[in-house]
Length: 206
Image 1: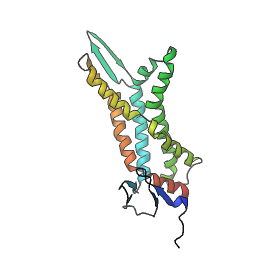
Image 2 (image 1 turned 60 degrees about the vertical axis):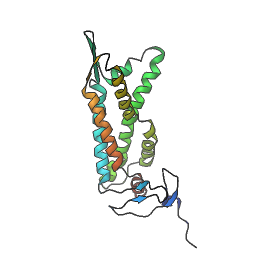
Image 3 (image 1 turned 90 degrees about the horizontal axis):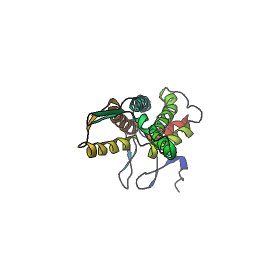
Image 4 (image 1 turned 90 degrees about the vertical axis):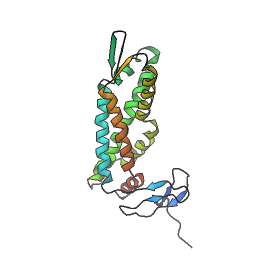
């Protein structure tokens, strides 16, 4: 009779919830779900260091995106430039103050917290050292914040708004807009390089 697998040796497909036995993979091997074909595990050589570098890059781009001018609008001889932080603080008076806090949280605060948590978890592992204290809790926090980090959605909403007001005023795009676009690209690359199963396995070994 085959021996039952330990819970730590199992992996669940994020698409179809199939529960599968995890097996060690080589640096160039990938594991896919036999039911739906979704990619489950994709180890990469030096992936931890690459993810840390991309997370640092994302933090720098986020700070630039917050404080540099985002958009400029000119109409009828009047013009105005504003940054993301200025737009959020415009709602900081009266009963709209919670809206200001929510905007800053989902666009700036939560993504930066997630990047910091990922750096905290992977920095010692990328350098061949034991994980720092509370690394598992930090990575669990980073994973839990993923659906609430809406910097990418903010860019999509801004693009839609630009199309709608483009005929009413002259719009100039500031450096913060391009910083946000770069942030979306860097975040996508980070997600492509990051193998969650490999990180959990490294934390278990550590």
